[in-house]
Amino acid sequence: MTAITPTVPIRRSGTLRDNRTLRRFLRHRLAVVGLAIIVVLTLACVVGPWLLPFDQLHIDLRARFAPPLTGAHIFGTDPLGRDIAARLFMAGRISLLVGVCAMIVSIAIGGTIGIVAGYRGGRLGTVLMRVVDAFLAFPSIFLLLALASFIKPSPIMITLIIAVTSWMEIARIVEAEVRSLRERDFVLAARMLGLSNGWIMFREILPNVAGPIIVAATLTIARAILLEAYVSFLGYGIQPPLPSWGNMLNGAQQYLASAPWLAIVPGVAITLAVTGFNFVGDGLRDALDARSDNG
Picture 1 (tube, rainbow, N blue to C red):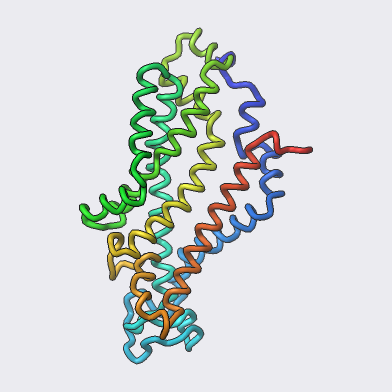
Picture 2 (tube, rainbow, N blue to C red; picture 1 turned 135 degrees about the vertical axis):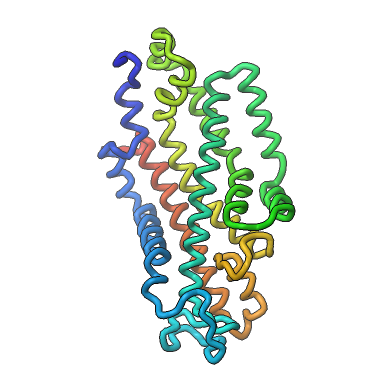
């Protein structure tokens, strides 16, 4: 069994367990900033609602349109007198959860198709990649809106719709990586030992393409958060009273002149989340590339 274990350089260049990889990541200042943003934002969304004196559905008509830092309303209130901070943190739970779950589904679909197409090649690989090309031929945002308009919106359905329109790039990345690895020595040794194709693909090759998949995962989360906000802003996504950053922006658009904080607060949250995940993705891409190590 030891004869089919990938060589040390392959394993070490594609995993965060390598100390050099971690050092390269920590040297990437924007990646560290992005990671800090994600951690703070996630903690705020998880713990924040428990620390506030109001929940996201509490209505106080006497406090309508209260500006930020008014009493206990740190981010102000909306047209119904609901606390924006409470709604922002609960919306963050939903938006971040949609992003993470959409990423998991996208990685599962795109990764499986990419591994099979890259390893098997031939007619099967060609057919699978032409299916990927067919999906890519449709602008993803229009495909997303078309699917959302025919399906009853809910967090689960929005997550699945985003995943269905986001797996193609992952499949292409994984297919290219697997195609470059399928003739390596450890794969040939596994074939000589009579191991099944499934074992070789998912137990031998998959760990060696973990680096590109991890990078794609972080960027997919950012894209999913942005798509959810876009669809909800247009009214096809998550519906009130369930809050999301997108439908908070939708409800704020008619008050931009009189109460701009209604749009600024969720807009800043979306910007921070997307920027943070993009920074982390860039840092991981550099850290997992052994050629970037000058030490």
